[in-house]
Length: 488
Image 1: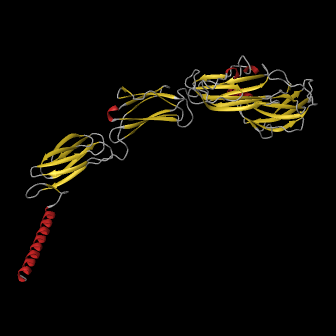
Image 2: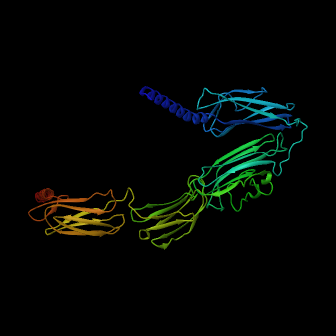
Image 3: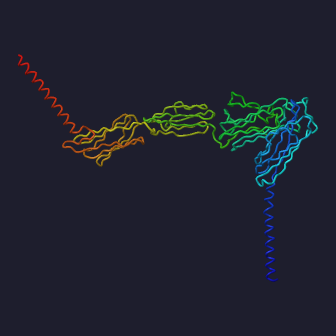
C-alpha cells in the first residue's frame, strides 16, 4: 500500500471516529432537552348554580422551570392562573379553575411551554375533561362529609424547615358538591421534647376552608428550630395546647374515628426535633454585678416569641438557692440577689439549659479608692481608702520598695516607707477603668512634705498675716487707753 493511500485511509478513519464521538455526545444532550409535563382536569358540580367547576392541573416534571404561551381553552370562560407568560417552577404544579355550563359534557385545554434548554423549541401540552355521562344541575344531590370523602398526603420530618399537607376529593370524577364546607388547619408547635409533651405553643399555622366546590387544597407551615409537633386537623387550632385546653384526638386527619377519618392517607401528625433539634424554650440567665461584690441574677424565658414554661434550679457557691427551683412562664422573668460570698451561681433548667455565673466588675460607676499622704520627718505614710467597692488588693511602690495589702470594703489601709524623695505609685487590683494613684515629694530643711500639701511659702504668708493683725490690734488698744488718760 502506497504512502498516499495510507494517509488517505488514516484521514478517513479519523473523520469517522470524530463523527461517532459527536453523535455519542449529542444524543444525551438532545434527550436532556425533552421536558416532561402533563395537564389533567378534575370537575366538581356546583349544585348551587348548576355549573361545572373544573380544576386544571399543569404538572411540570422537569428540572427546569417552564414558561407558558398560547393558552387555548375550548370553552372561552375565565381561567385563573394558567395564562400566557405564567412560569411553572421545576418539579411543581400550577392549578387553574374554570367554570362551564352544567350541560357541557367535555372540554379541552391546550398550552405551549418552553424550557430554559432551548426557548425557541415549544412543546404543546394537551388536557381534556369529560363529565362521564353525569349531568350537573341545581337538583343534583350533594355529598355529605363522611369517612374517606377526601384523600391526603402529609410531610414532616426531623431537620425539615417546613411541614406540608395536600388534601383532595377522593374517588372517581366528576364529583358532586359537598353538602357543607369543612375548615382544615395545619399547625406547628413549640414543644418540650421530641416526643409528645405538654404544654405546647403555636409557632405557625394555616387555616383554609374546603368549600363545597373545592377539589384540592395545599398547606405549608414553618417548623421551629427546636423540639416541635405538627398537626393537620379539622377545625381551628388550639393555642396553647395544655392539659386544660383539651387535645385534638380524632380531629387529626388520618385518625381512625370521626371527624379525622373524613380523609384517607398517612397519620397527619408529627413529633420530633424540628429544624435543628434541641429545646424550644429560649431561657437566659445573666447577672448584673454591683460594686460591693454582690449582684442581681435574672432568669428569663422566651422574651421574644412565646415558649413553654421553664423550671430553673440553681446553687450559690455550692449551696442550694433560697427560692430554687422556680418555674418561669413564657415571656416572664425572675430575679434574686446574690452577695459576694455566694458566687459562683450554677443555673440549670428543665429543658437542659445550664450556665455558670461569676461576679465581675461593673462596666462603669464603681468609685475608685482614694489616697491620703501623711509624710513626717522619718516616714512616708500612704493611706488607701476603699469607699464603696468590694475588697481589693493595693500595691504601693516608692523609692524602690513595694508593698501589697488588701483593702476591705469601707476601710483604710496604710503603707509606710522611709521618707525620701521621688514619686509614690498605688495600683489597685480592681475595675479595669481605675488608673494608678500617684504622689510626688521634695526635700526640705526639716521634713519631707508632699507637694500636694500646704507649702512653706503658704505657712510664711499665714504667719505674716497673723503678725500684722496683732500689731494693728495693739495699736488700737494703746490709742484707746491714751484717750481715756487725757479725759480723766
